[in-house]
Amino acid sequence: MLHPENIKILHIDSNNSIMWEQLQALGFTNESDFSSTKEEVEAKIHDYQGIVIRSRFKIDKQFLDKATNLQFIARVGAGLESIDCEYATSKKVTLIAAPEGNRNAVAEHSLGMILSLFNKLNTADKEIRSGHWNRESNRGHELDGKTVGIIGYGNMGKSFAKKLRGFDVQVLCYDILENVGDGNAKQVSFEEFQQKVEVLSLHLPWTPETDKMVNAAFIKGFAKPFWIVNTSRGKNIVTADLVAAMKAGEILGAGLDVLEYEKLSFETLFQEDNTPEAFQYLLDAPNVILTPHVAGWTFESHERLAQVIVDKIKAKYFGEPELGKVEKRVTGIGGFFFKAENSKELVAWYGKHLGLKTDDYGSTFWWKNNDGEDCSTQWSPFAADTAYFAPSEKQFMQNFRVENLENLLKKLANEGVTIVGEMETYDYGKFGWILDPEGNKIELWEPIDNAFK
Image 1 (spheres, rainbow, N blue to C red):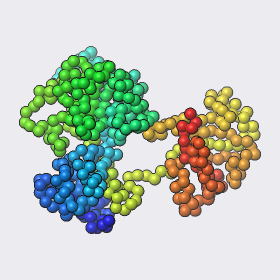
Image 2 (image 1 turned 45 degrees about the vertical axis):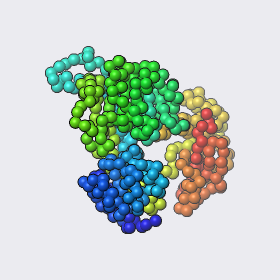
Image 3 (image 1 turned 180 degrees about the vertical axis):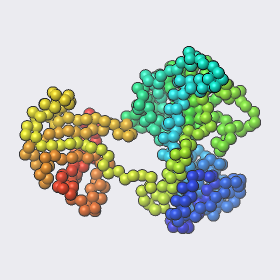
Image 4 (image 1 turned 180 degrees about the horizontal axis):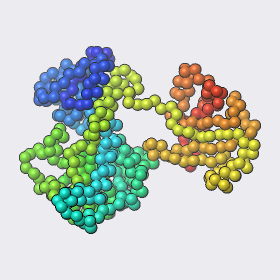
């Protein structure tokens, strides 16, 4: 592996300045070329070990054959459809993308489109500016009570599902991968998905499998008329079929951040100078919202995308954790344990007077983490003469939930923290114990919450 000072990186699209500055500070050599043709870049790409792109042109087999020294391709965005990934991988070129960088922006944009469609914000605003005050025709719908379906449950889909947690909606997801559902969305079969969904949001890459996926047959498979939002790729929808379905009342409204007619670069709209008939309908329809492929392109995501790319390049060459990732140690409170003169009577008292759902061990409180996963925290009185808190003589013991107990105990030992006993493993997780500087015993727990259900 070459040292960073010998790594030349060619930037062929402009990006946030922090990328250039941080890569330079790490010892990489940056060069830019925002204007040369693909052929001109191909003629010199053999001089570079890395290339940073957005979507200016396709990195195909011909390009890769000329990139004889290329070690990585970094795409400042979520998808890699502009790269011949299989061929690049066969040449041992590392592919880097940044779906983490704009997932929040896409989720917020998707939610904004749905709420605007439901409440007719675009048409109402236009009418008032034209001097019309039409209340009844601008009566809206409420999202609460609806079933929202997400196709593609990766970074973008999961982020959108998290945004919906504040609404009283059922969220279903469909994905080609198994077991991707979580506390924010239930994964179902496509048949169940089509039977129940009333609002559809697409969060898919553009692949041979998803190209023209939303067509007439796809739409007619849904049991109910539905609203549709697409912030993924325009070519995943057949626009003419979408328009036909809107005219037939099969689709109630559409929020489209991407269009079938976009050029690969996403910088201009039409591949030809004429306006397609189906697109003209979208331009005129009051139940359509259009934005110019900007769902993931906020001021905040512009910087975050660049940072994610820098972090991943650094991880490749330095073998260190990515800069943008915070090391997880404690992730929550696992329990609060204390000594009691009569623990059983005390548990009964808390159940009767404070309404705690109790058992022989106390009470378990359930909550969800940021990923929507079910987590538990235990409240437990212990007998006054318990030895479980030893060697501490305190009346209480804290329990913290942790990410990776085995690694954490090694790090704590290296940091001079007192470790009590050996790590123990049970059906409901791994446990370890430490002492703080005041002699308080702390229990560390890497949980398996499902064991309590």
